[in-house]
Length: 107
Image (cartoon, rainbow, N blue to C red; front, side, top):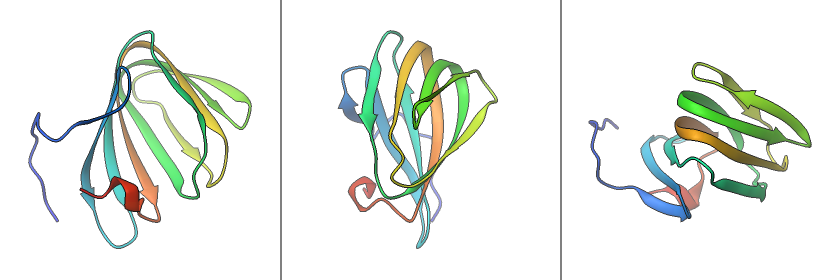
């Protein structure tokens, strides 16, 4: 699978938080998140492992109760079933990979 950059295809997940599945294969799925300053991604969990990279902006990421200040170039792994949330400090762009594939994120 190959895709080219496009401003189309974003879905609103929560107010000020949008996501777009970029590509997926049999075992992984890559998603881009657009995050607006002042918004919050509520605490949640899912069975997939989640690996992320902050492209731009600034967020506070809480993973299993531990808080991290995340700046551009920082990366993380969230184990499957771990509770996590995020506070968006600046308009941000994050890219995350889920394994196995999140069926609910398939286009």
